[in-house]
Amino acid sequence: MIEAAYLHIPFCHHICHYCDFNKVFFHNQPVMPYLQSMREEMKRTVEIYPTENLKTIFVGGGTPTALDEQQLAYFLESIRLYLPFESSGEFTFEANPNELTKEKVKILHEYGVNRLSIGVQTFNEELLHKIGRVHTSRQAFESVEAARQVGISNISLDLMYSLPGQTINDFSKTLQTAFSIDVEHMSAYSLIIEPKTVFYNLMNKGKLRVPSQEDEAAMYELLMNEMAKHGYGQYEISNFAKPTYESVHNLTYWNNEDYYGIGAGAHSYINGVRRANIAPLKKYIDSVERSGFAYLEENRVSKAEKMEEEMFLGLRKTKGVSEETFYEKYSVEMKEIFGEPIQEYQEKGLLEQVEGCIRLTHKGRFLGNEVFQAFIGVI
Ligand code: SF4
Image (cartoon, rainbow, N blue to C red):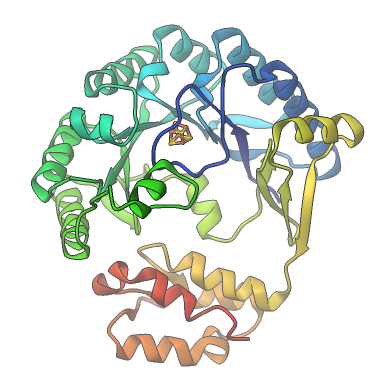
């Protein structure tokens, strides 16, 4: 049964220097035709792959809050018309602090959005400017306040670290400011310089200085310690939550479960088939107009691939992958298939077995990618 849906709004009013997401500059884009196509894709998708009730909807981007009030209301109405969803579920909207006006927050709340994921990144004004963000730290406070006032009680702050010129002390200050806001959830990712970004070009010209690997590791250590001290449980490598506020949507991915993916460039995983939608806007709109769908490619995932995914996605979670659940899903013992990499990485001190689960050790969280790769191509 499909219990999760991801919807992609690819518009941004400003392009950040580090961003390699699927997004376009808002100006002069066919926004309403795009939203109409998404409405059609939602309708057709649920007709063909029905669900009784979604437990989680996540609207990401791009920046979903780039939409104006009228566009926002139309888009949310589409969701409520075509995606079966009960108010007890988790309905998340990604937001940029400078775009989360009182009016928009009110509209979001009226249509059932009950969780916001706010892209704060850092509370250091100079760093915000350096990474190409256009909001201020004051706007981050104001956006949380606006959300609280309409009754949205589940808020995540999204932070970044290892930014150009950032010191450990800077990051510590950002964390302390974040704690003072007292939200329910936080994520913190280290900056990765991706190709085709402003930062990538600067890096190639020798004009970008990022913190050393030692400083990056020290920031991650600080992050984990401070989160624990302030009552945020680490439930994934980069995600932390107050008790009961772990993101249901993100756990869908890490538990290797099905989800719809609606919109340009969105990915879906339904009944053992992974699909990727066409990313360019105009082509997406044309395809939905022609056929109701915009699949660019699809891949039926074999049992072997599913088992590998179960491991490298599941190991992202702090509690790791349950041997019992693995057996229930695949009718084979985890160690019969992955005994070798498990033993190798236990010996290296990066994996451990706790309460029937295989999971990363504290040291392993720093070297997650190395461990995950060991589970690919094993079968
Ligand atoms: S707002 Fe988000 S999606 Fe848009 S450019 Fe910045 S990081 Fe990328």
